[in-house]
Amino acid sequence: GLKIATIGGGSSYTPELIEGFIKYHSELPVREIWLVDIEEGKEKLEIVGNLAKRMVQKAGVSIEIHLTLDRKEALKSADFVTTQFRVGQLAARELDERIPLKHGVLGQETNGPGGLFKALRTIPVILEICREMEEFCPNAWLINFTNPAGMVTEAVLRYSNIDKVVGLCNVPIGMEMGVAKLLEVDHKKVRIDFAGLNHMVYGLDVFVDGVSVKDLVISLITDPDKSITMQNIHAMGWEPEFIRALAVFPCPYHNYYYKAGDMLEKELENFKEGGTRAEVVKKLEEELFELYKNPALAVKPPQLEMRGGAYYSDAAVRLIHSMYTDKRDIQAVNTMNNGAIASIPFDSAVEVSCIITKDGPKPIAMGDLPIQVRGLVNQMKSFERVAIDAAINGDYGTALLAMTINPLVPSDRIAKVILDEMLESHKKYLPQF
Ligand code: NAD
Ligand code: G6P
Ligand code: MN
Ligand code: MN
Image 1 (tube, rainbow, N blue to C red):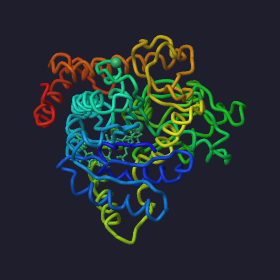
Image 2: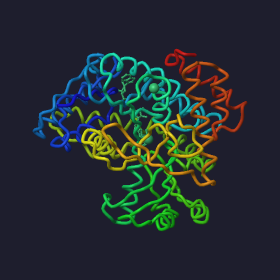
Image 3: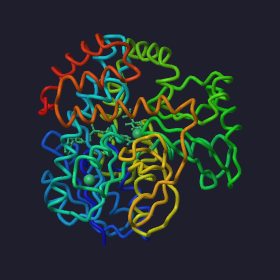
C-alpha cells in the first residue's frame, strides 16, 4: 500500500482530498495518509483530521489517517508528498490583498504584489521540505498545490535536488468542467490543449469527442452569465470582438490582465462592503470548521464548494492515480518546459497538457504561443524568474525589480512603496531578507 504525506493537513480542503482517495481506493491502494501541520495549525489539524478518520471509517476503506506536527516522521518512506500549506496563514493573505489596494494596485492572492510576497514566504519553506525529502523519502513524488503553484514548482525544479515534482492547479480541470456544463456534454468528452503558465494558461484549442468547438466556446463566454470562472474570481464577460480576435480560450485569471481597471474597481467596491477575499474566506472557514466538528458528519460538506479550490481532489487523485498506474492519459500540470512551448526558457515551469506516466508528466509539444498572447506570457515568466531569484537571494534590488516588472504594478515608485510596506509587515516570514 501507498503512504501519502500531506503538508498543511489542517487545510479546510483536506476532506476534499480524502474523498478523492476514498473514491479511487480500489484502483489506488493508499494505506496511510499522514496529515502534517505546524503548532499554529494544531487545532485545525485535529478537527479536520478527525473528520477524515470518520470519512474513511464510514466509507469502509482501510486507510489509516495519522495526524502529526512531526514532518520528518510523516515524510519517512512516503510515496507521494502533497503540499497545501499557507505560510503565515490567512492573516498574511489579508496583508497581501490589503496593502497593494491601499496604493491603488490589485490585491490578490496569486497575482500582482500579493503573488510576489506569497512566493517570497513560501519558497524557503518548500526548499526546506525538499531537503527533508532527500533524506527521508528520496524516491517520493512531490505534488505541489501550494500557491503560487507555478513559481513554487519552478523553485523546486531549479533550486532543489528533488526532480520528481509536479505542480497542480484546479484551473485547467475547472475550465474543462465549465465547457462540459456550457455545452451540456459529459466532461470526459471534453479535451483542451492547455499552454501557458499557472494562472496564466490558455486553451489553444477545445475539443468535444475530438472535434474542435473552440470558436463556439469563445462566442458563448462573451455572455457574462456563461463566462467560465472560479468562486474567488468575479468574471464580467468579455467584449465579443476582443475575445473572438484573441482566438484562444483565456483562463479566469486573465480577467485581472485584460480587465485590469474594471477588476480593481470591483475589488475596491468589495473591500468597502465587506473586506477582501481573505476576510470572506475567514468567515467561510469558520463555518466549515464548525461543521467539521460535528461528530455526526462523515462526508465532505457541500459548503466547501464556496471555496475557489473546486475539483482539487479530482485533479490531485486523478494525477496520482495516472502516475501510479502509468495510465498515459492527458492532464494539464506544471512541469519543466523542456521546449514544449517555444520561446519560454527550457528550464522554466509551464502549465501545459502532458501525458501522465509512471516517470512523471511528459509535456506535449505545443509549438509557440500565438503572437497576441506570447508577450504577456513571457513578461509573466520574466517576473516569475526574477521573483524566484529574490526569494532565494533575499536581495532588495531583485525584489524591487520583480515588483516593478509585474504587469499589474504601474511604476517603480509605487512598487517601492508597496515593497517596503510589505517587507516590513511580513518580516516574520521572510528570513532571507
Ligand atoms: P490554510 O490557510 O488553511 O493553510 C493550510 C494549512 O497550512 C494550515 O493549517 C496552516 O497551519 C498550515 N501551514 C502553514 N505553514 C505551514 C508549514 N510551514 N508547514 C506545514 N503546514 C503549514 O490554506 P488553504 O486555504 O487551505 O490553502 C492551502 C494552500 O493551497 C495555499 O497555499 C493556497 O494558495 C493553495 N491553493 C492552491 C490551489 C491551486 O489551484 N493550486 C487551490 C486552492 C488553494
Ligand atoms: C482557485 C485557484 C487557487 C486559489 C483558489 C482561491 O481555485 O486555482 O490557486 O488558491 O482559487 O480560493 P479561495 O477560496 O481561497 O479564495
Ligand atoms: Mn533539480
Ligand atoms: Mn490555482
